Length: 77
Image 1 (cartoon, rainbow, N blue to C red):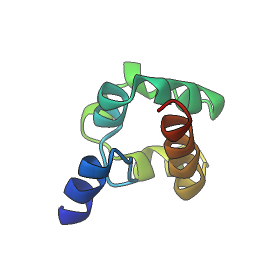
Image 2 (tube, helix red, strand yellow):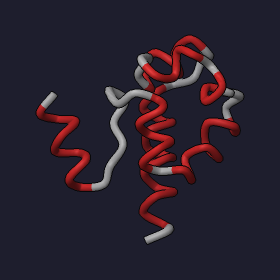
Image 3 (cartoon, rainbow, N blue to C red):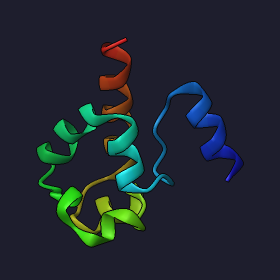
Image 4 (tube, rainbow, N blue to C red):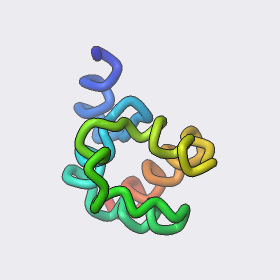
């Protein structure tokens, strides 16, 4: 849990964060979710499933996805 809190302070997304939390804090992340075919926002699991689990279910490498989301966030600062 401490890693998630530290990431939040730094404005970073981690694979431990819930999908809905990522999208609420960083709406631009929807672009990356859509890129990989994750329509997670409409899914009930988005409230409790973390990014890692959601990515794996869809056959996506969660580390790559997190990096792309964080790169996108950083590019918009």
